Image (cartoon, rainbow, N blue to C red; front, side, top):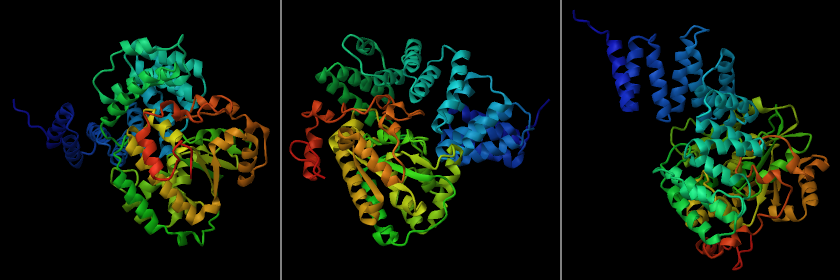
Length: 539
């Protein structure tokens, strides 16, 4: 007997075969044909949504997963699978409130497998919900105690929450189970190691594998531990290896392309479309949420310390490094390009009511609001959007952290940092020039509204500078702000362990340990009249 397949079944078979080959474009094309013929074929919605996710087509994936899920009965167990993948699509879009709601819906329906618990926890943590994520990771590691990746994620979340001993134990579990280079690097960063207590021999014996990501993590871990024991020659050698491996990592939306040309185009666009006269008549829209405090500066400039100082205040909430404004820029402009920011988005913003950006931002951060009258957004690279933020939030406060540029730039260089300008000394200098020029432009536009803070001055005389900042923010002095290491809450940044200690000068002048190796960067910065021949700040 000959069976004649329905055209929808034939197309579904094509989609499944393409999925087996990893041909995402073919999966999407075949799945679309299935759904045109028979929209009740739920497997086609699933295949389409997953292929779109794997192709970084997050908006398309979110729409497809939501549509597929809505075709299921309310109590159908497959709804959890669709919800979990929808969460994966929502967070890269900056739609964190919806992601959290979808995660909670999935959990309410019942999640019993470790993989889904881990997925939901990962994205809750990205949405600044680390305290909600940790119990899920504890359940995941209990269900699958041999999964190194779950122990690593658990350790990261424990570290963000300040549970450093628990984090160390979780990272140790991960490296005992597999050659997990991320866990090795996280362990190296967790604390300062000593000649008597370190992991150097274990790291040297470890096999990082062939991927640039794992090789880079391995090399940066060795740099950190050699640096801790003051073996600077070996430390510098491994740092150079780490930077070379990091340069070779493939570009993705989470590790996007970078070029000084792109930054030059962005700066020119801001200067063209947002000149000083754009800010002469600020809007007076009524604010509905808390007053915003944006803490900005170069990465590694002291932004996390300032956040912890303000987080200790009874009137301030500190949800962390929010990606809400970059997401607003992308979503409101309806940009389909890979860069997080480009000249076309800025041109679009100049023709768009700033309230549209404020509305997106407030909608996507409302779930974090705990009722205190001030809310911090500590994303250093909000410098890229500062003028538009000023127009969107006329009463926002801006605290600009400044640090010796060699300390800031070396601070980024020595990390396996999520910024492609941080792996090469010439790129570091180029990026600093962009940052300096952009901040000079914003100062020319509304400099009186920017609270400038020198990290070195803050460390040297904490109380007077903390009082000055609080006064500029309209906040009364509270003694708790002098002990930021005691502030509660998650710290999801590279400084998560350092800021658990009292204010100190450990990081002042740290670049001098590798002064000779940093000669190319020093020469560039000196030529830019940023530092003098001794490496001290000029401007």
